[in-house]
Image (tube, rainbow, N blue to C red):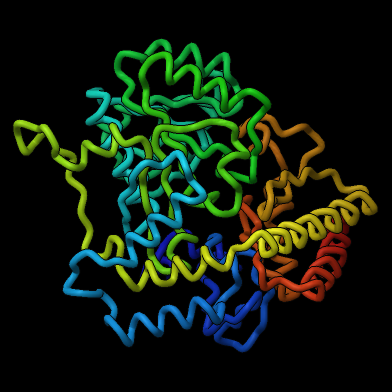
Amino acid sequence: MPNGVASDFKTQYGIFPPHPLFVERAKGSKIYDNDGNEYIDYCLGAGPAILGHGHPKVIEAIKRQLDEGGTLGPFGAEDELAVKLAKKIKERYTHIDSLRFTSSGVEATSNAIRVARAYAKRDKIARFEGQYHGTHDYFLVSNLPPPPELDGDPSLPPTIPGSAGIPQSVLDDVVTLPFNDLDACEKIIKRYRNQLAAVIMSPIHSYSVLLPRKGFLEGIREITEKHNIVLISDEVFLGYRVPPEFYGITPDLVTLGKIIGGGLPSGAFGGRRELMETLSGIGVKKPQEKVFHSGTFSGSPLVSAAGLATLNALTEDAYRQINNTTAELVKGIKDILKDNKIDAQIPNAYSTFDIVFTSSELNSWRDILKADVAKRRMMAYGLVNRGILFYISPHWVVTSLAHTKEDVEKTLESVAHTVKELRE
């Protein structure tokens, strides 16, 4: 396997290649590597283990489904558990009229833009510079820092490939927007308004928890409605960590993943009925006019069972505990950095946060790029050597129901020692 891993993102888990971290087992807030080392885990599989690893109710639900229906379910046919999970999601996302399940977040986002194109009868999509929506060709565009020769006016971000192998035809159908710059976004969207099918965005920037400015999301919603452009809210990571009402807008489509499958491969996309009806084929005269979506494991009863157990366990008390744990951790880290006279910002939303080493206010993705990324990486190295697992590059740090006061105390003690090393 290139770099010794099954996915590029796994190189962010603990140590850079050629020494990736190999995990042998996990329980609660802890993971254990193949050398027997214990870590307090603040990566949680990129977020889905919001109850902690191996939560008893989730394991029980998976075992029960294995005994009753095996891994795939009734010959790959539809299953009642998928309907129950859809209804459970509807309780939280009341603006979703109907949805379809997928087996991953990238399947959710790629199908969402297909629905948007079919509905709007336009080809281009707009996305925000630096955001991550999965590994589909259209999303591996403008997701990396621009090279120096193209790093010009931040209000006019270039549309550039974020990977080798992205064809020019894809780049021609992607428009890049600057996050938190409403005036610039309005000018760019207006320029392409007759060609844009959709604007896709993570309402909290998917890089170091960059929060939207007041009025920014509302402005994007107003602009897209004015020009009949589908607004897709990508909440594959945010879903069930940040409540949808926090954003103050109603998108046309929402994409979900990770948590709704209880840690098993999962995703979903859904929204306004008239958009989702493009999948039904009702009223179409030619088969090519229907949006095709399929997936052998979409809505798998094993995944649905784990997802239902997870969402049912996320009570108000559970959320209160998770968010309080995060707040305690964030406050402790802020105090340590302040005491050591180290400039840093800690953007935070509910059970997510990151540490950005800069004295400047964080308004845009470019602001984060100017921060001391090397210091952030060295901090992660220092912590992993003390049994605390953060992603090594700027990314979201997440907590779970399983994290205890003792975990927080040990983490803060490790942060204090690591910060002292950063000063030396």
